[in-house]
Amino acid sequence: MTSDPCRELRGALGAVALGNADEAEHIALRAHLDGCAECRAELRELRSVAAGLPLADPARVADVTSSGLLQPSPTLAKRVLGRVTAERFARRTRRRRRVGLATAIAAAIVAFALVVPDGSPTGTHVALTAKEAGVTAKATLRSRNAGTEVAFHVAGLHQGEYYWLWVTGDDGDRVGAGTFQGTANASDLVMTAALPLRDARRIWVTDEHDKVVLDERLPAPA
Image (cartoon, rainbow, N blue to C red; front, side, top):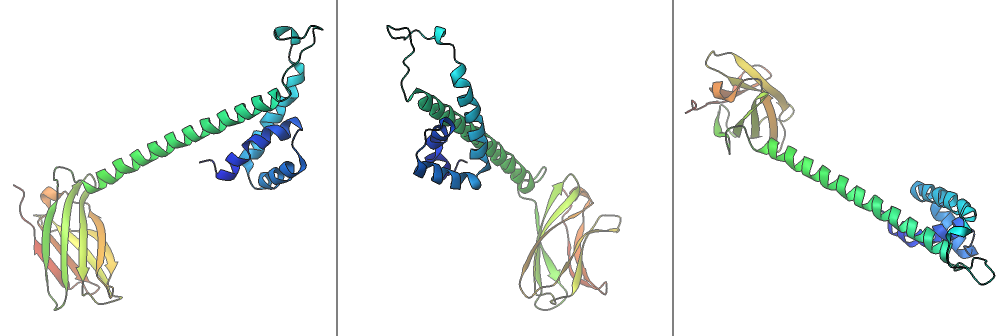
């Protein structure tokens, strides 16, 4: 998005390109150009336009004096260059807005895909049974293309110790969803096990000694 200083100095670009800027205007613009690559590029384009103005064919202009000499307005070139600059800034602003809108829509689609599970509006909710006092945990399981996503909330585990989250099917083989570390505060984690949700029958957590600390059976799919 074009900044306020760029908009304020837009007219001065045309004056400088024509060599008609006063000293104060020139100094202010020069200071701005040192830090603005976009305005420097714009000035280069305007100077190339200004350089071509003397090559205009007088025979193509109908407004002439009785002597046959052209009498354009003294401010015509400045107005033309100012209008060109304004149109280019407006075009760039519109383009940036379109890109920003497309990016926002894409982000919304991705966010929706991450929140809404395949085939289930809410997912499967379970509260895990703790094997130690003071430990609480709950999970929401959702079907994903990669397997079963587990949104896991846990509190009360030993700070600094490592834990593993598992999902198991009817065959009894455990499939790892991820590992995490116990913290002093409650933790919210999102992990994925490479096992389809329709086949999942158990969710459980073991500590670094492979001892079960949290466990719960999952309901069979309807």
